[in-house]
Image (tube, rainbow, N blue to C red; front, side):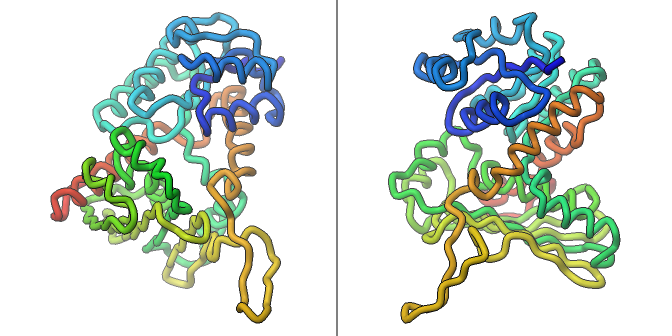
Length: 336
C-alpha cells in the first residue's frame, strides 16, 4: 500500500517536491496539498491531479487520510508545524532549517522523542547526492586517513532583480539560508563533532539592500570543533557564471573534493575565446537526483521506522549557524 502524503507549501521548492512525490517516488501517493494561495492549490489540482486541497494548515494536518506530510513552508513555521504534525499522528519531512531559533529546535526534538514510532526528517538534501554519498563512504573507509578540515561553499548565480534582498527579512541571513547545508556536510564528514567557537566576516558586493537586515551577499566563516577539527565556509549570492557548490575534505593521508568547477557535463570547448565548459545553472539542476533520492529515503524511513538523519543534526546546524551569524554582526569570535 502506498504511503499517503500531503504537502504544505507550494512555492518554488514546494512545487519541485510535489512533482517528485506525484511522479517519481515509488511507494508514495500525493493525495493532498495545503497553501493559503489559491493559485498554488489550483496548480496542484491541474498539474498533478491532487483533489484534496486545504487552505487551513490545521485542517490539513488533521486529515485522517494522510500518513505523512511534507512541509515546504516559511522557516518561521517549521517548528510549530512539525510539532502539530507529530501530535496529529503523521510522519514529517520538513525543509531546512528546522528553525532559526535553537530553543524551537530543542522543543521539536523533545516532542519527537514522545513519538518514537513517527519519523521526523529534515531536508539536508546534499547527503543524498551520489557524489557526496560516495565521498562520505570513502572518508569512513579511511581513504584520506583521519579527516580534520572541511572547506565548503554554496555560491548562487547572481539575481539582478534581488530576490534574496526581498527574502532577507525572514531568511535568517546568508549563513542560515545558504551555509546550513555546508555546516551539516562538515559535521557529517568529520564524524559529528561538537562545535565550540565560530568567527565570521562578510561584505556586500552587489546588493546594498541587504544592509537593512544586517545581511551580506558574500560571507566567510571558520568553525572550531572539539578534538581539533575545523571547517571553513564561503557563501555567495553574486556568482556571474552559475551555481557552484563545492566541498573539500582534508585528512591526514589525503584529500577529496566534490563539485569543483561547477561543470554541467564533461564537454570542454577550446577555441579562440579560450577554454571553457558550461556551468550548472542553479541548485535544482545540481541536486535534481539528490531531491529524488531524498524523497525516496523519507518514504523508506516511514516504512522501516529508521530515519537516515536525526533532528539532533538539524539542531546542531542551527546552533552553529546562529553562532556564525552572531559573529558576523558582532565582529567577534562567538561561542557555539
